[in-house]
Image (cartoon, rainbow, N blue to C red; front, side):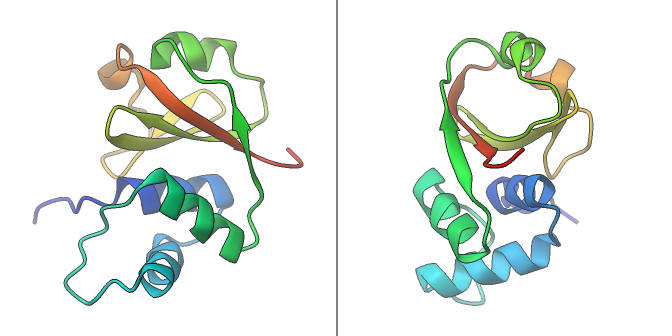
Amino acid sequence: MAVRSNCGPHALAAVAGLPVEDVERQYATIHGKGPRWRGKSRIRGLRRTAYALGVDLKREDAGGTLKRWVAEAIPGRRYLIRVGGHFVAVISGKVIDQHGNDRLEELARTRVTHAYFIQGD
């Protein structure tokens, strides 16, 4: 079975502590996605979905490689990160996406283009 292109909903679910299915359902409802939608998302759509789910995302300055950025991230914060066209969650130094729970070494050299953390963390 092929892995779906649901990195955005998966990362948001990990950051928010919600089931991936709930995030996908909310995203699909907000954006009028039908049953053939495979999970592809954009940052603006994820922010709207987070808001609808009661998750308050706050923008963080982005830039640099993911490895450097994770090393300099504030401990204890949960982050939603976009690297290129891919979304990941960063929780306690672990990079999480739909492929696994410790992807830092594989994605270490990718450039961080967007970074958000949960307000209140």
